[in-house]
Each structure stands twice: as C-alpha cells, then as structure tokens.
Image (cartoon, rainbow, N blue to C red):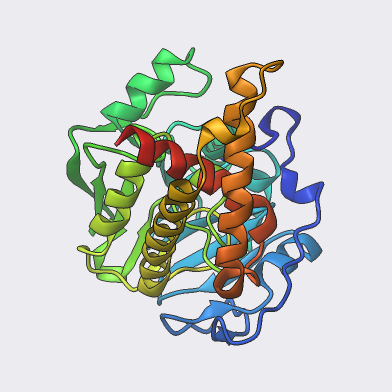
Length: 338
C-alpha cells in the first residue's frame, strides 16, 4: 500500500478514515493496553481512534501487542532485554509507533523485521536505528529475507540492508528464545518478497497488505501483483497455527477474516464471470473511437453490474463503492488470461 512516506506523513492524517458502524457484521471489545482481547473479536473504534489519538495499543497476549498509528498496525513483542518490532513503517507511522512502544515498556527496540520491500513499510527504519542507539549500547538487528535484500538493492538501496539475512523461503530465528518463523511463499501475491511472520507460541501471525479486517480488500487487492498467488497465499495462511493476524492495516484479524476474503473472491469471480457472459466488448465499439475506449467502457459496464449484484451482501462494508470496481477489473483480466 503506497503512502506519502517522502513527506513524513501518511494518507491517514489527511483523509477521512471514519468507518460507518455496520450492524451485525462483527463482534467487538473495547480497546485495552492491559487486557488481552479474545481471539475473533474486533477492537471497537480502532481506526477512528487512530485519527483521534497519536497511537493505539491493544494487548494480544502476555507479551505481545498490536500498535496502531497513522493508518498502520505493527505487532510488537516485549522480551526481557528488548523489543521485537515487526515492520518499521514510515513517516508518522514510525514515529508514533515508537511513542506507543515507550508507553508500554522502557526497553529499547533491539530487533526489527522487514516484512517486504515497499517503502511505506520500511522507510522509517533510520528513526528506529537512531532511537535504539540512544537507548541501547547494541546496534539494532534488522531481520529480512535474502529476497527482500535483493529488492532493496534492485531499487536503489533507499534503506539499510538487513543485518541478519534470512535465507530461503522458510526459516526461523530466535528472539530471546522465542521462535520466529519467516515463511515467504514461492508464488507471492502482493509482491515477490512478502513474508508471513509467525510467532507460533504467541498464536500471532503478520502478513502485511493481504487483508484489511473490518473492510473489503484495499483497491486492487493491496495492490497485488499476482491475483492467483494472492488467493493461494490466503489458503496457505489457513494451514498455520495462529489465532490473531495483523496485516498492517485495518483492525485485528482472525481466521474468520481469511475465510471471508476467500468467500468474497469466489463470489466476485462467479458474478464477474456471469456478467461477462451477458456482455460482449463488441457491444461497446464505436467506429470513431479506438478499441481501447471500447475495452474501458466494457470494464466499466461489467463493474457496475457486478457491484449491484454484490451490494446486498457487501454494501455496508467500508470502501464498497470505491474498491469493488478495482477488484472486478482484476478478476475480469484474470478470467480472460487464465
């Protein structure tokens, strides 16, 4: 998800993030930095509060928390000597997340995980490095896969390379004795290096930009580079043992959210395919315009019909009007190509 990292702020501080309160879609608990939330519940007003307050803190387990700031969420695990931060974020999200960590512990951030190389999730790393140097005698350990390291180099080395490189598609390291599994799918939907971070003993996983719990998927599914792989990645998520999922945005997620997204994809694909059978691109051809014009008008028409088909089930979800046309276009192209 691309945000305005160059100017040190995120879209979340510039636009209306208020979410209508749909009835009956989710069960909620009040936000608490001290009480662990029950798996399966959403945090009441999580996104709204992110605009009203500098940061949100929700305790997930005895030692792990969800930190929300400027439209971004990160899992942090508090050890005996330091803090593990999963995804350093960028701009305001980084600064405010660090403030949130200081609100729950005096320990320094000693370890960070790059989940993938998109600048909005990593560009804030210099701030984390600097704060660690101020609060600890040790240098910050930056964990990231060799895939992420190669992409950092490929795109000009805008952030420091990982100091602790994780080799291959499935590996593990220890944070103060806590096993941290890093699984990078061979076929990856969001981007080639997007990693699934699994804290099995905590029942927590983080897979950035794959879900937006409490809402429909972000426009173009994240955006996703490979829709087929995106769906396969969601199915793989179900094979792991976890109770909470953080995807970097939205609310705290659960296994039900993964099922919901898979159901949405199937429903979207079925309705898009049905509308494509009823409409032909040739119906939109005009002799005085290019075939590109006909193609765009065909997509607009299919999207409009599919959106109305989906409205009874999904119309109350945040972003419905804006995101469904982008999803239809991706599914339409996918159905044509595959």
